[in-house]
Length: 228
Image 1 (tube, one colour):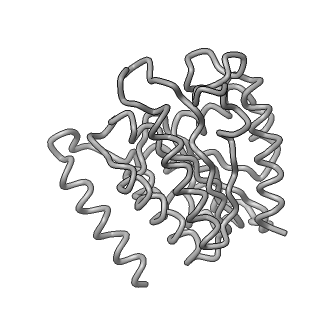
Image 2 (cartoon, helix red, strand yellow; image 1 turned 30 degrees about the vertical axis):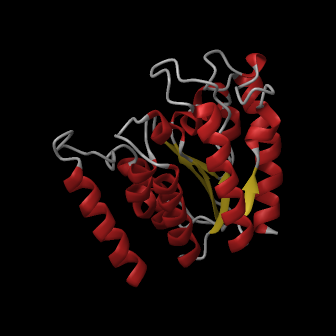
């Protein structure tokens, strides 16, 4: 009960702070509302896995639709989103679907400044908030590292090649401290200069089908480790 109250306070403060930007639906709660309602009507066999994230999570649906279709995997990625927006979405898009586990991949858009300036600590606090909400609702937590990006083509000069490794170190440490599973995409996809390997994506940020295939292999291992 206390976590839900804290969550609601954070949500209200977050929306109020950014009302000048958008008064309609800043966290995009409407995006999956109808799909969530339909999922709730389907028998839950206790094997649902929700993927919470941004465009990289959303991209599974376009590059590897077979990975999501025909499985109990539920894609709740929204392009461009930052961690405060995802934190607000945790109850309707994750908890209320009663999954056995959630894969959280978040932070790169915060570093890019999509919804304003963010420090690494601010990003990590939001990721911790998501993990705590999931854990309090008996949902296993899989924390994914942010994918490598040397620079952002839509916003150059934000230093993701330095900030992403720093954030990932914090995510890994927190996962170990709390007993969550750490899913290391960065180590598998790093070109050696903290950028995305050229053959795994077309813009240096978003994976292509080959990139997602690598991610799928390691995601499966992480899911099995989390739910065993």
